[in-house]
Length: 253
Image (cartoon, rainbow, N blue to C red):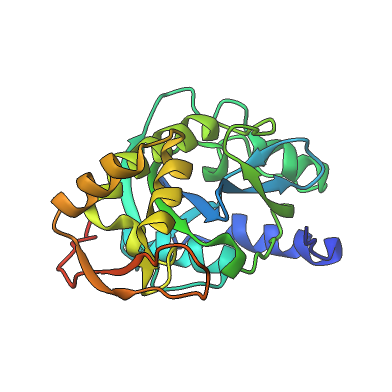
């Protein structure tokens, strides 16, 4: 867990609410899932002075595209760039921000703004998701958040807004798109065994597969290139190594 110096965040919040550079009533939220050693987690941030957690998100500057905003948010929270990032759903239920965390947060910091201020308005958010090896990331809280941690996807704390729903929808998107080489990004080494790939699938999908059936399915997709055998000095039969074939994958919005 990492924490930010509380003495700095009040000025940050003042600068934020006084800016006029954001697109009105629109935000981005990133469900960042992490995989490592048969565990699937999601990155969550805890708000200052509140027992509520959220996924990384932020407002959109007037001079940036949606995807640029999502990439910026992802980098601010992990200091990783060039990752798989997919837009998966727009969340616009009229009551999704009724538990106005921002209003409570500003009040706790002694910051008063008019009731009609833009930060209190209804927001529609565009959801993006990513799947990374969470051991490779560094996490950085900001003035809104006192700490940031990885949580098991089935053991979530109390969530702000509709972020539990965003996590659920994002996980379904990840699971539906595993076969489109999504797993090739930042999750496996360049060369891997079929067993490595099966463990990844089982962890993300939350189910077990018969070894022969899984291998048959993966080879039928035509996305794997078989390489040399992997000899580790053990008396067991050496498995083949594989890598993903080069392909054009469109991650545009």
